[in-house]
Length: 356
Image 1 (cartoon, rainbow, N blue to C red):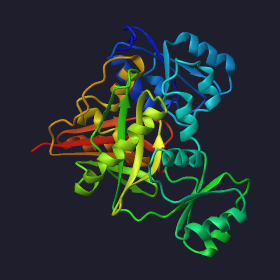
Image 2 (image 1 turned 30 degrees about the vertical axis):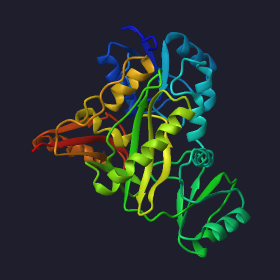
Image 3 (image 1 turned 90 degrees about the horizontal axis):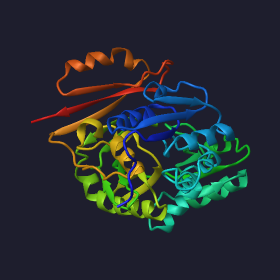
Image 4 (image 1 turned 90 degrees about the vertical axis):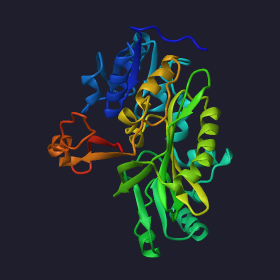
C-alpha cells in the first residue's frame, strides 16, 4: 500500500477546462486543495480551484512554483506540452509524461498499441504527396486523413472518398496519418483507473453516439454487441496502463465490428464518455482519479441500480434551455460556466437515470 496524501494536501491540475473543474470538485470532497494552471482563456476550472495560475506552458518559473506548491500534480488536458509536464519533476506528476508522449502523436500511439497486440485501423504516416499516394494504394478508399497531433471533436481530419478528394488536400508540412475506414456497428470506451500500487478497476462500457465528430451521448447498458467485445478491449487497456506505469484514469476508445474491437484512440485523462459515472456509478471517474493520484484506496466502479443511464452533451445554445430538462425525473444538470457560447462547443451535460 502506498502512502496517501493527508487531508489538506495540495493537488495541481494542468489545464483549465471542465474536466479540471470536475476534478477540483471531487478533490474538495476528499479534503484536498487544488491549484490550477493554464494559459489565458476561458478557464472554467478556476471557479472551483483554491488558486489558479495563468501562465504560458513554457513559463519555467511559473511551473517550478506550481511544482513547489503542490504535493502532487495531474492533468485534465492531453495536449499539455510534454516539456511542461517534465518540468513538474519525476514522481510528482500523474499520469507520467510518457503517457502524454504516446497519446499526443497518433502514429506513435497506434504503433504502441499494435506492439501490445491491439488492432487499430490500417494506417500509414503521410508527410508528402508521394506518401499519400503510396498510403492510398495500400490502404484504399474510403479513408480518413488526420493530423498526427492535436485535433479533436472532428477537427483536423478529412474523409477521402475518391482520387479527387485526395488531390484536393494540401499536405503542407506533413505530420499527417492516413487511416483505413472502419465499418462498425457501434462505438464504445473502456475507462479504467490504476492506482499507485498497480491496482486497476474499470467502469461498465457505454455505447457512444457521435454527431459531426463530437460525442453527443453515451448509453448504459451498451447492448449485446458491445458487451461481447468489452473483455478483449479491456484486456488491451490494462496492457496499456501497465506498459506506461500509468496512475489515474485512462480511456481507450474502440469500434465494435463484426470481427471484434478495433482500437481508435486513447486519452490519458478522465473522459467525456465517463461523465455518466458522477451520478451513475458508486465512485465517479473524477473521484477515482483523485484517489489514484493521491494514493488513496480506489472506489467501487459498478453502476448504481438503474434500468438505463444516458449522458447527453449540451452543445452551443442548448445550454440556454438546459434548466428545463430538470423537469424530468432523475435528471442531473452540469453547467460548465463557460462564457463564450458557440456552435459545437461543449457547454455542459445532462445525465438521466431511468429506474424501473
